[in-house]
Image (cartoon, rainbow, N blue to C red):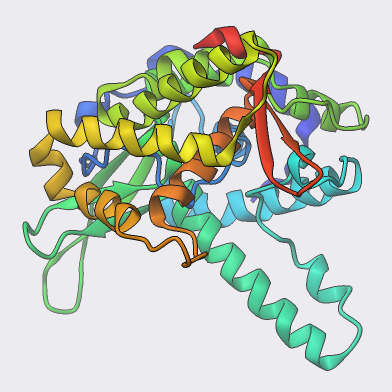
Length: 341
């Protein structure tokens, strides 16, 4: 393969034409999950994966085979993550590298044998997670026999995965298939928007305060989150902004506890209006589990995990400013890009 240089990224992106994109309807189906999965903790790793896709395609071949895409994405994004970690603020709420895959350096830097074994485990689990949850994977649904594609790039409608016959047969004489990844129309548009982290990496500067410009944040919220398939996700975003705006007017920050109430009410209302989808994807059981939790039980419910993920991504977008107070509790106020909703 060719070596990757970020310096070439702007030219590569310039070359990409909307005509390289294919229509989402041509791709493998989306399973209809109405939320961004709670393990997709940030959006920047997806932006960087999309950039990798741009470097792998051409006018003659506007797609890349899924496994090659997973490999290349992991290799390149984990290297970039190293660079980011060196040049970012280290406070938990200001980290730009959250959600990025760990690189092999973690193993090389391990001193003792025990640390090496630990590091190998961590890196390998981080690699699998990144490949499946960011780049994406094909899943065969046992009940329906249908193929679905999973991962944040597809949930946000940035790529189109297509299952294609290779023309070869396996040893039993069955047709063999491969999954090809194309850009979607939105994927092409979104690639053209400058990203401050990518610019800083190209210029070898310190990391910016925010992972996204206002234009980038607006595009993500209005074109990628505000879509029918992520209906509940967008409702969560709207409810959070309403609450935080109301409190900000009085000069108050909003606590995670207050947001839990907002998320619970929003989820409950959404289930009433979408009972079929809620049952199909067990969103109703996420709500019940949260409502039945005893006060004395301090483990995080799945609904709280969704709140953490959604708020983490919205803070990353600069919609909210996330602070950690004197009692190490998370609190939120309006951020520099709060008007993009």
